[in-house]
Each structure stands twice: as structure tokens, then as C-alpha cells.
Image 1 (cartoon, rainbow, N blue to C red):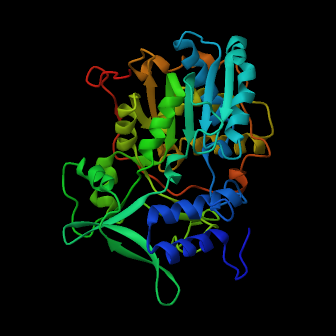
Image 2: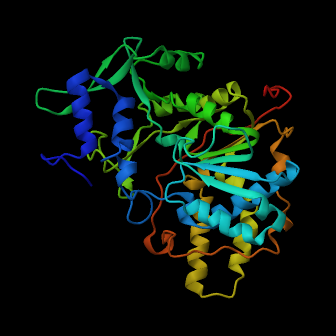
Length: 404
């Protein structure tokens, strides 16, 4: 990790420079720099996923995650009339493990689909992808939770934003003031109810421009967003009155975001209501929001688990694979993450159209762990528990497709 001459991480040095020259900065600006500063930012300099990192993701747990997404893409391709080429853009691809697992498994699928598939990976933006409409799918896994957030609290009945500054002792500290943008108030006004005194929370304003970029990239097709979060009603409930901001360092909840700058993850739960609303405003119609466990089971997880349990392989290898697969659908863990599917100009009006027949996986080989996947069975690592309060399908008769 690069440090300046006094031993600070360069991301922290940049934060301090900005405060010295501009005055206090928003927490969103702080988080952006801490995570993404080119020299010293967490995501630009750290190995963040896996046993040597700070957390693990579904692709790192087991290749069945990528295999099932490959099957889902094949089904989407069929429903869309077998277009060629069929583009899939993975945003926030990280180390590329999901891409490798997914593309590898397509070798076992219909040859016509494999030939049609053009799989592209990008960072958290759409850089590297032409700003032109594609036919296919845009997917992301644990991307939106890493967008910078504005933090706030309700003080004497008034919305106050959290700013970051430096005190007389040279420490990074918080202070509160009028919101830096009216967009924060507007997002919270959509709740239709006042927040109680002392309530603390986060607002992710990057969702709107992100949805606009996704819609520009996609001319016709689907968007699959997988992350941990809630609908707004649950996100801004008494249960989360202290907010959802978390830091992660070496697979445990970290400390204050103002410590280990550039060396620990900073994340907040996703407001899926905002993703739906901003997506609809950009021409993306929601089909369904469901748990990762429900999603994976609907597209063949149980069949893969059954196949692995019946394989004639070493008992330890079989148990390691079954442990990792079950982590993907574990209640309170990865299985409680949410999957939002949106569509644009496809004519599809329900998720049921995308569900695979259980027999689809019968003749396919079961994917097995490789060295690049995290050894959950040996290490017994587990994600922080996460719960869902409410899930819903969309009534497409009520929410008509407004795509131009």
C-alpha cells in the first residue's frame, strides 16, 4: 500500500488535503476517496475478497453461483428470441471470478447460446462499454452497496447531514449541518412519513446516475442486481434507526470508518425501492424482487446440490462442496441477499417466464470447487447475518412498461 512521507495512506492524505483546502466534506466524498482513490483507495489497492481479504462473495463461495447465472442467461436468451450477438455486461466485476465460472459453464449449454454470448466485464461504471444499446443483460453482484452514501440524522425535527472535518487534535471527526443537496430530502420525503428524533441513516444518490447509465447501455433485455439491502420502508424503520453503515476488516465487522482508511471496506445496505424507482424513471420496468435463496432455487440450485451429493468423489471434497453451496442459500447469510430483475423492451411481464424447468440441469455436470474459491468448509468463514423483512413480485398490470 502506498503511503506518504509521514506514513499515512495516500487516500487519507487526499482526504485531509481536501478538508484543508475546501473545509468540511460530505461523508459521501470521504467514502468515495477512501474506497476509490487511485493511489491508496481500498478497492484500488487491496485484495478484498477471499481468505486473504476482508469478506467473501457468492462467486467466491462456490462456482454453482456462476453456473446458475449462466443457465439463467441461457433462458433469457431463449425468451428474447435467441438474439445474436447476446451481450452480457457484468458491472463491478472485481477479480473476474464470476465471469470465469459463468463463461466456463456455458461450454455445457446449447452451442448456439455459447456462440451468441459476448460477455463483457467493467468496473463500477460502464467504462469499456460503448454508450450504445445492446441486446442482452446487465448484471451486478454486490456493487451498489459500495456506492458512496450521504449520512444524516434527525436533530430537533430537522434533517442534518453528516460532514467530515478535522479537529484541533488533527483527528477526522463528524459535524452536522444543512444538507449539501436537496436530493437527500427528496429521497426521504418519498417515505411519506417523518423520521423520529435522533434517527440516523444513509442515502445513496449514486443510484440514479447508475440506473441512467445502465439503461443507456441496454437497448433491449434485462438487468439483474444482486446485493444486500431492503425496501425503503424497512431500511428507514425503527429497527435500523442507527443506520446500516458497516466496515469490514479481515472477515469481521471493522471499526470506525475514520480508522484504517484505505485498508477496510465501507458499505451500506441498498435501498431497493430507490433502485426500482430510479430504474423505472430511466425506462427499466421491475419484474420481481426476491431473496437470493429463492432465486437460485428457482433456477436449479436444488438439482445441483442433489447431483453433488450423489457424486462418487472423496467424502471430504463432497462435504466441502455441499457446505459451500448451502452457504449460497443460507437464511440470514448470502441466501437473504436480494435479487432485483428489471426489463426493457422485452415484452416479458412476469418472472415466471424466466424460471427454468427442473429437468434443465439433469444432463449437466455439477460444478465443483477449484483452488481459487474460498475454503469455507476448512475455514468456517461466514458472512455477517442479514435478514429480509418483506419481498414482493411486481404487478405488471399496475406498473406498465414505460420504456420509450
